[in-house]
Length: 201
Image (tube, rainbow, N blue to C red; front, side, top):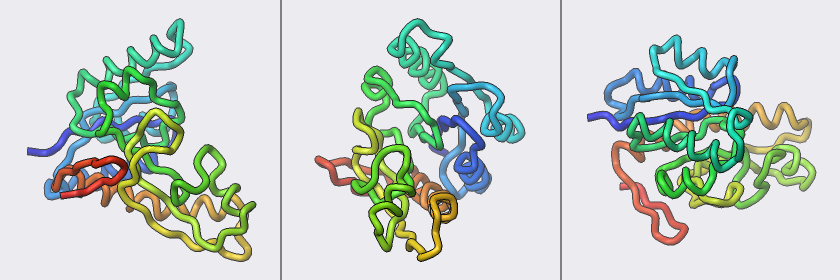
């Protein structure tokens, strides 16, 4: 039986599309049960609808407090009984209630080799530091910013003529297959988290 994924998006949904394409193969071992977003009118939701996947939207501004939004998002995801929640370009910090409910099975990707260059400007920070290699990381989400246990990483060389945009695009090109491979292995082989070490299988 296929594992159930809920994918959270905030924008174009290119990582979502990579997962939709992978899930079309029954051997992948997962199917996307729903796609959630924190705003309307985005291509990520359109991608889900074109694929016949249910969608939901929970906007922060529709709730009195951030905690109320977190509770609403938690309920919306719970309705789809996910085995794994994938934050695929979801640009909001997940709150305590959400992580208490789904902790240890929320996966995110980050455009750097964590723990280097956390936060929202990873490609710029890598260039500013003059590193010769950066990359992308798939990790479980915890209460910090890009601090959760690392599942898998892919290296990307920094070229002499790179600027922030070209480097970020090459990292994204590595990030999509890394996410697909990692989610596939997790759902097919299972995983354990011991301290900060993730073991698949």
